[in-house]
Length: 254
Image 1 (cartoon, helix red, strand yellow):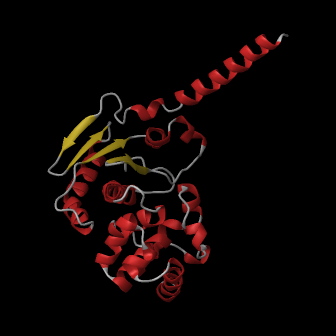
Image 2: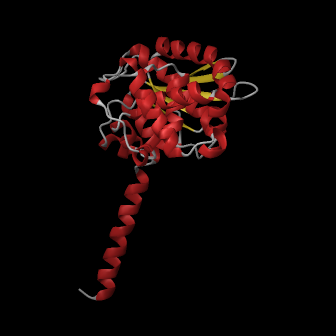
Image 3: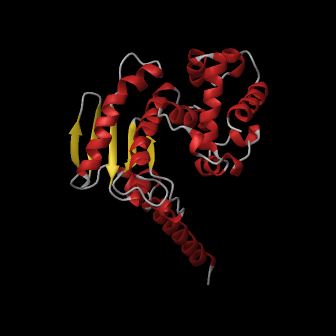
């Protein structure tokens, strides 16, 4: 085989792999699925497939909670939030990450956001990890993320998730903290959502925000969410805040 032919085969193979990779993202090109229905409220618009009762439950909750979330995050009025509800968990996941999401087997992953668009698995089909009610409540968690995307596009994952859990009242008392440990500062700086979940990030980031709110006040927490600046907003280094968080967690969640 001559060099030109070999090079052609290599280039064609590389091109084929690139095309195959790009094709996996086709589901992300449109958040809507064929035949989606619409519910329009004062503050939110909900798009849903066949599970109308569950969609209305989410719609009513999100519309009512919009003013509270907007006020808590310092907005003058509720923002234009769109919620896409999918009857199948796999559909929701591929709308965020494409077909590659199907290889990850994340059975706990039922909601996300893309900017001010909320992606949610229908509470009618919550999967193995969630039930109807906490799946519905996750819509508020994701709505906070939607607001956070406006507040600070570079917000740390730990803070972003902590605010979402805290403002959606996902109280961590239901967790068995004997099964968790306090992660190191570097672990808390992760931007990987799977790593975040694996180190107990959802309940622990709630406690982190709770600690900051109780210690420094909500205005400082909100300012920090915008700036990511520990010294400016709290007058302490990140390691000092971390030590205070550990003490708070042990005292309040033994």
